[in-house]
Length: 315
Image (cartoon, rainbow, N blue to C red; front, side, top):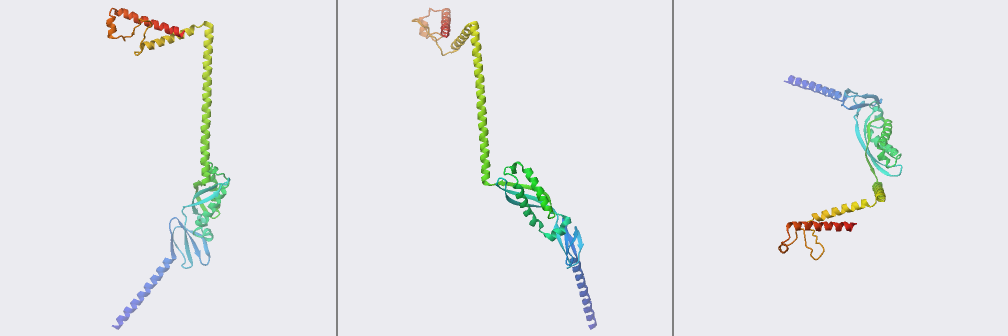
């Protein structure tokens, strides 16, 4: 019985030693492996040699535990935005917001890690962005920032790419996303626009008055020429044209009066009567001896008499 117990204890002891060995081996293997994901690169820090110059790409790699330590960099392009208040050439204050797409230079990752660390972008981009914006904006007047905005953006991009390259940072895109002027300048611009609109309206009124003046002159010249031609014709052939115009006017007036149902003509004299069908029934009984033919001739006689009086009036 004692021999069986000693065998069991010996077996358990060996099993514990094997498990401990396997655990130590697994721990050593796990600490000797590290994984670099897609879109990342690794920089190795060695306790004896410092930062190694080689850049480790994606995948699973070996290292010496305790002696070496990996530091992972995200090499994908990331957006960064920062604002700056700058003074223009004409001493106006403007607020600008700049957006950049930045990534590290993969070949220079050991140098970036040595000089700047993992948060290199937060240390570098805001400072150089404000510096470049102030330097470029100071070259332009406030209104030129709007009228020459493509040129301003190109200058900002060129200067910022050059400054970022000094820190081994690659900029894929640079854009001015916001531009705002001060309150006083905005009011001045609004007043200027109102003044320009008033000036345009004044110019329009002046141009219209000039056109009306020219039209009046042309009309006056036409009337003067017409009067001169009539005067020449009158002097040449007499007053026949004027007499013809009088007769035509008299005919027109007589026609209008004859067609009007509300106009009555009463001839002069004591025996005059109302014509045009306005006689009452009592008058027709008293004057029944007048035949229809006599009444018709009487009507046209008085109408002709009226026309003659009108013609004499115009003459």
